[in-house]
Length: 340
Image (cartoon, rainbow, N blue to C red):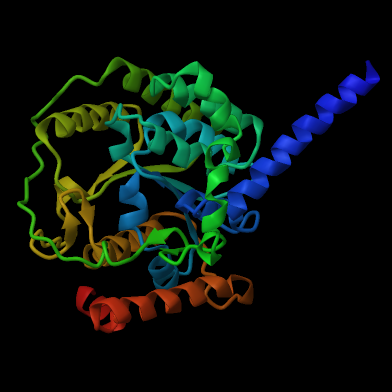
């Protein structure tokens, strides 16, 4: 019997270690893995969202302007259903002054293998990761016979060993979680659709139940949370759901910064987006400067710019500026001066 128990323990440990080694060697880093790699209690802000978060908020620019550090807990099509568990897990590692939550993640019931895997594969092995898998897979109608591949992801990706290269260990397009590459430097003309707060759509039952659970968690844990909505283009149904959610969230006593509606940022829809739903690097610069200033003025955030322990943030900002000049042939400091 003891031999069987020892064998089971060995197999479980082997699978867990294999899972962690696999993540380092095979998986491209995401904004979430960047957050988990930061040293404990070094992030002043945790910013949750879908692709709007990692494409819109330039963490290195915010650091250069205001001196605080931000972790972008974001992946493609990330939904409200991952929010509470990610908060719980990251609070074991970080003690941020404020949590920023992009409301766009509250409007979607879209789940596919890719969007689920990007969340769960980015998390270290833990009970919360298991809970996340158990929660998301039924939402995505994933066959139960495929569940094991999510708990131990190397069972799916092991065939990629031939593609190992340095980018597996450090992303060349993520700058402290912020995405900047050939895509996000593109300028695309997009037809602006003004915000209409009169459009109201019913919140899907599953989303509303989760919204209540998230707000109760925030209230019980006494967390400083700022909900934001970034400038972009939305269809009427999504806008209507978000209006309903904003009304409910504000009624529950939480601050919502609707920067799509309020137009306090001068977003040029002929210049500042790279597709209908995302700001490009120019629009992101405007958004980041405004939000970083807002956070600094309204929350007790420190300034680490002269602290050598945070030198990697300065280094990443320089790396970002060099890449910006390489792709656009422009000086980023001049762009920022024009924004200001």
